[in-house]
Length: 304
Image 1 (cartoon, rainbow, N blue to C red):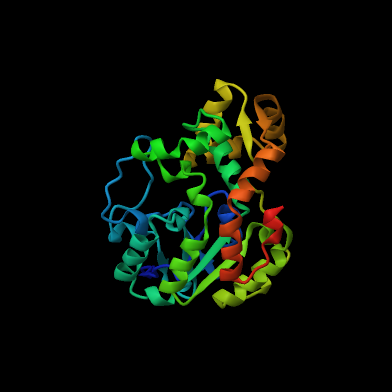
Image 2: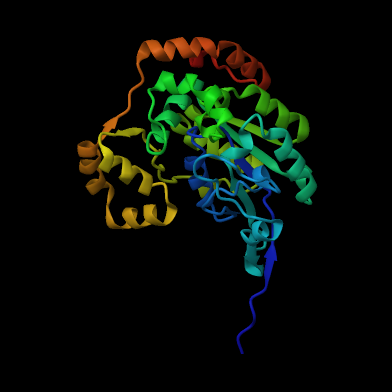
């Protein structure tokens, strides 16, 4: 007689956050390959939208509708009871939402004070431009600088915060808010992930109290590279790639070797003008220096 499998629910013991286009997806891919960790593939966004109505003038953000639906994403059979679960949601980092998100976490998660937060941050202007390029596959029709200036009016029209290029690139207040609310907050940089992957993963293993060896010799995960559609067909292809099930289908059908010729034909590699980058980097100097003190990392290279 087959023994019935029993399941237990283990809510996240760690949460990955950070501004969009900072490497959170790549970091999540690495962590999900560790045999002691479990993460849902999709972003949860639950604590950002708990009991909140979305009235955005464009597409809505997917999230579980209630705590029961959220719990269902973190069920394990009893043979996996030693696994540590986690989730990734960049929406948790948006500064205007942080206080409400923290309130929801503390009121809903039974072990909220023990959650280990992991944030990954990127040079602000590089992040802004990467987000802009990504958004051109959706509703972004303006130039980079026009889009930055358009946020005041877009906010009044209920555009998504993903189009608040400047606001989402000011990190100090978000990090400070989480540090004041929780005792476990770890901050990494995008360049740690790119240039010091082994060190970052080893440090994370110690932080999460899991085996370090499982991260050794882990193959590099591909970063989401910024390309701009060169015509309407390419833009539609870009939109399709943002639908998870269709993205899986195209990845299954097309190998990386087959994708590259298509990218070369229909997409242009996005490059930010040097003077524009310098101009906006100067705008972020105050926030970068404040962040440097807050997290104890040298960020002078962000000012170049």
